[in-house]
Image (tube, rainbow, N blue to C red):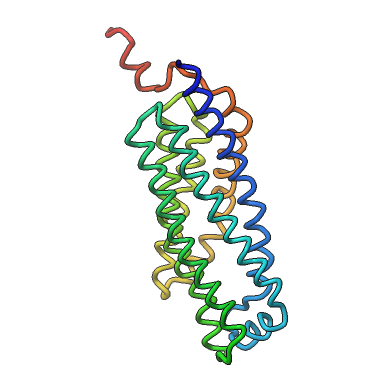
Length: 240
């Protein structure tokens, strides 16, 4: 009876880790290559020409974002299953924050779909540019929620035996970085400073997520079923 929930927890950890790695690879294509190649900041005309010249590439980028949304849903449910044996309420919080982030991302992707629809109309370069770049503003807002999600996971990591404390610290740092950067992005007056701050914090943001994904894949299949919390260890020790 106790082994079936444990197997389910281990499968959830492994599938979540695989989904996170696949997500990173697809994002490298959809955002790092397609979006960055076609969308030129503060240049509506060049952006318009790029989109009109490479509509198939743009559509593949949108498909990539659709795949990312699907993978995010897998991760949201998977992490809920992973953390449920430790703390049901906090597991729900972790899963819910990821789910809310995914809904916001999906809404942002719909702006790209709308921009793709405009390719077959007489829309102006300015209208096309504003539609496609509205994706970034919506996604940036969602990344505030994503940062809170990472903070919740990091907190669970440093409080439990389940995940190495160092990974928990990296996740906390990544979560605070995402939240700070994208809160600041909501204020255009400090956008230049925020972009520099994001470059500085990019490494810990990336390393925290990657370390967690690797741990889920490598160690998730051997999750323990006892000695879950570091705090309980302290509580159980006799008083001196």
